[in-house]
Amino acid sequence: MATSAHVLGWGLEKFKDAYEHAGKLNDMYDCLRTPLDYFLKCWVPSQQTYWVQVGDGGLDHAFWGRAEDMHMSRPAYKIYPGAPGSDVAGSTVAALAIGAVVFKEKDAGYSAKLLEAAKSLYAFAKSNPGIYSNSVPQAKAFYNSSGYTDEMCEAAAELYKATKDQQYLIDAKFFYDPTLAWGYFWNDKQPGCQLLLWELTQESKYKTNIEEFIASYAPGGSVPMTPCGLTYRSKWGSNRYASNAAFIAVIAVADGIGGEKFLNYAMSQINYILGDNNLHLSYEIGFGNNYPKRPHHRGAACKPGWCAASWQDSPNIVYGGLVGGLDQNDDYQDNREDYVKNEVACDYNAGFQTACAGLYHFAINNQLPPSPPARC
Image (cartoon, rainbow, N blue to C red; front, side, top):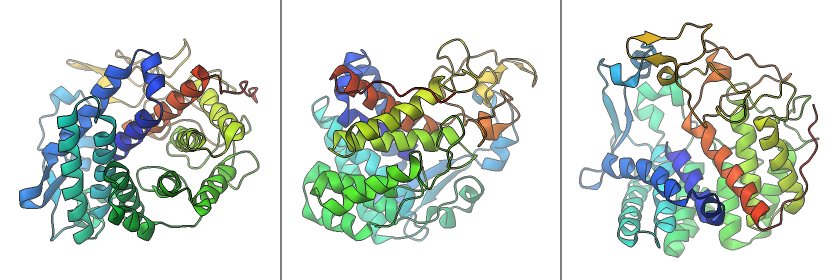
């Protein structure tokens, strides 16, 4: 959730005109305020405690039904000085800090509140380094974290953007990793760190990092591509990784990197996901007429007292939800029981939405090149 809020906030900062032009600016502020309000409730500075998870993943996953009907025990888990989590705290700081930036004109009081929370949570994360899934073993099976320096880099960079306090920039550079990034997602913020440092410093090494990252995802790069043209980083949420690379690409173009080449790459990925593929299927639910009807989503599949059978379409439509996606041969089955291909998740949508907002921004400013032809 923190990753998603940060990615969406960064997109609002860069592409506010796109949201405005679409008549969605107020909706977007509401969309961001929901998780930001939640983070403010979860962080208790006086107790140096941040609540990071509600519900036991095993128990929650054992129940198939509507959220309204979940009556099992739903314990809450926290990090604190004896059980740290700089990764989850850092991700949240990045979300709160970009929230402070985008709400500054809209609601100055709220912006100040977000910034205050971001600063105190950052101080906590920096003073108590550690990986949250070590402190909260219940997170391990679902969101096992591999490190925290990338999240702390994004956190420090966004705080520098919000405050211009040099110490944050020094910290961001300290946490920076110059190697080629694997991808951008909830457990890997390296490309975001590199791009934020380019935004803030204009130092060429950061620009080179981003050029190399997008080159690795684009045709001919080191990351495989499906025959019909989607970058295929992993089977789990293949659409997510492609969308997130597109999100990094459009932010990069807004920051003066990559130009038409990056826009063409971002368009090719988003167009594929929306229907320029072998199945002529939109992987975004509710877009067009041909889209997944059986996502792996309890709320979509169930009505009070009844859930759709595996062969039945969901009774409720999760409009806008992006399903995990296809395999490396562009194959996909609309099968609720195959959660690898049919899950929806807020972090699948955040990069996708920001990439769409970016492309729309360039379109309304007459800076979008002609759409690349579909490969299939």
